[in-house]
Amino acid sequence: MRASMGPNTATLPRSTWLLLAILTLGWGMNWPMIKMGLADIPVFTFRFLCVAAGAIGLFAIARLSGLRIAVPRAEWGPLSVMSLCNVTLWNILIAYGIQMMPSGRSAILAYTMPLWTVLLSAPVLHEKLTRRRLAGITLGMGGLGLLLAAELASLRAAPLGALLIVGAALSWATGTTLTKKYRSSLPTTSFTAWNLFLGGIPLAVGALLLEPSQWRPIGPSAMVGLIYNMIVAFVICHWIWFKIVSLAPAGVSALGTLTIPVVAVFSGMLLLGERPEWSDYAALALIVAAVATVLIPRRQPR
Picture 1: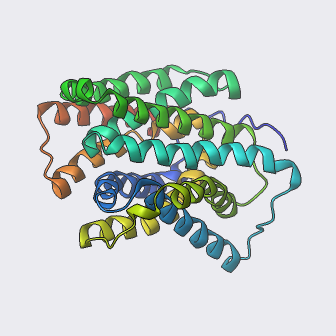
Picture 2: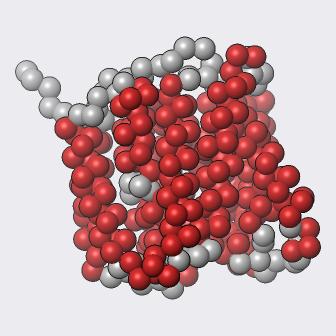
């Protein structure tokens, strides 16, 4: 295995734009879906069912596509660490944190992830902190700050929830950076499937040891949340995410996801009755501007 320096471009390749749009809608809508599922399903059980579905679905896709599945011996160590960060810690910390906060605001805190990814990618991957990336961070984090300002009272009431979700953001950023540093020789689908499989093992252990007494029949709303997570969030969106990371610098790919919390806020309004304020609309403008700095290619001199 070799450490990859990744592309030197400062923007996302055009080939990833459609993937990013699907990812934004899929993961943005997922935040209220998580809250719906957790209303009736214990945390470890809910997350294990979602992760297991994703692993099974992606392994099936890889097999039907004739892709290589076997992991080279030298890649097991980095793969295990990536799965711990990107799957186990992310899913557990988010699930516990979102129970203490509104779904839209939880997504906003979680998507401080691009800041940590860009900062980690500089020393770990030697990716340059270009002016465009710094501008994207400034605009995007300004938008997130506006959305967060309205929830300061809630954060003071539930600091543990906020800390858990920020911890999840740090964990995901670490996993994303490691994914770029230790490029796997596996195809994207197989690599993602193994991430979900390995990351799901601690979730299965937690569900079996801690939650059997909490298992009970679930309502229609929780069932919708569970099915959405299993199919959309954990099969389709996980594959798309790792595909984007494989095609673009880690910092740039993470900045490109800044519109996800905007979708989360408005889908929370639609599905859970959360109402946006003026700060939500102002943040939307800032975040769209942030994404534009990442997506729009720099003019080349004639």
